[in-house]
Length: 576
Image 1: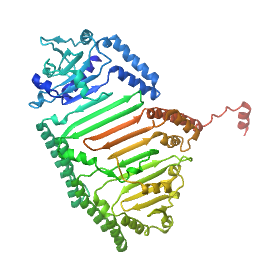
Image 2: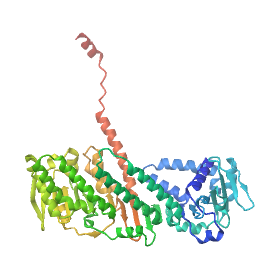
Image 3: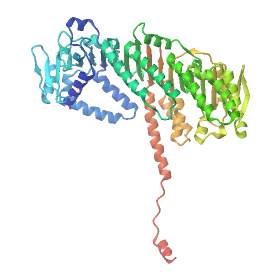
Image 4: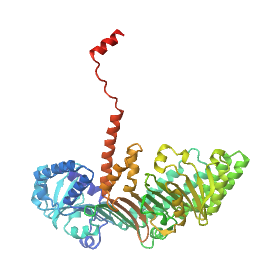
């Protein structure tokens, strides 16, 4: 097992982790192209126990960990490797000769002898050279592995021996400090990748795009094919910027047992002054019309307002024109075609604008365990789109027209239209939203749709909401607010309110029920994940709850066993 692990590390180092074979002064004066840091083995073990306990698998986890610890003691691994310090890996690409690069794995060491004895016990006896470097042949793949001891670490590499030369190795205390101290973290300095490799990558990308552009798609018109090719050219252009102008990528994931949170972070930057850097900066400058719609009491919040590249916007116009042309050609009725032409003209500015700004808020539950939704999207010339909706309604069947009530309500200067479509909801929709109408309203810059328990009040709130600076993308989920819906579904739509309340109270306290994912621009592009550890506990309890429910349902569906007939009853039946 140990031999296989060492072989695996060797492959990882050789294939995926380039580092320098350069002069000593060069190696010391420059920073690595990449650094990976993994928390200490002791912390990893404690994290595993913590997550297992949250998931209701504490006993199984302890059993597995005891087996691993027993094996470690049996092989003296605990005497060779230091379980209290982090594991790492670093590397730097040799710009003069990228193929002459290698990576270095850092393993914290307590004592050299037990490690050497361990390797010898599995048939991998190391040989020490005059330069202090040990060499050993990995069984699979059959490649040479080199390592040396220094700074209380084993520096391990494959193929390229010079990666662990005394003058080339780096101080772990400094190297691992470059990467964020977390359960796992990584830092990639993409601007150190040689231009020759980047050009090679761009060339391969262009070749792939060219093949895709030449493909013939069944049913695609000449105009559609031209639009598709232009959009692919635009995508290739931006991918090339990404490859050529990328500066740094940072990743981290952390399990905070004290705070009870799981967090993940991503940072990405472009070279100063590059096109990519400007695009990332512009992403952080935009406001969303619907930043004010995000509610801290919602079960789900979604917000998306990216900036589309100019070439993509330019391609949207012809695509819209082609779609309109096809739609009108399919309509043979002259009066309907005239109406369709007017409708399409009214929504054309919105479709051609290339602006994406949408939001969705799912709120509740109410006392009756019903929810309310609010959806909003940015539009151009909202009044014209509203008129288009009214014209479209005139073509609906009479029974459907009877459900439509234009100008039924009002909020300030905004008219609110009511659609009595709740009778068309299926059983699941009624269980979630209740028997409430759907409301639609327009501002000059937006369309809003709401429905459910507080549909009318919510759309009025939405109409008054002000634009705010907000993340480019946001997804926020409140598990305590969703619990009645989730657990009610597990019961076939009829969850026990008291049982649900008790389960939620046992799991969530305060604001520890959230899952939040964001993406925003600025000096760097930043992504983040923040999740309460209580969510894992709730998921485990929910699984137990569902299993219990299925067992109960199974008992109800299982036919009762027939009692054996008495001898007298059998004789009477035989007579009959």
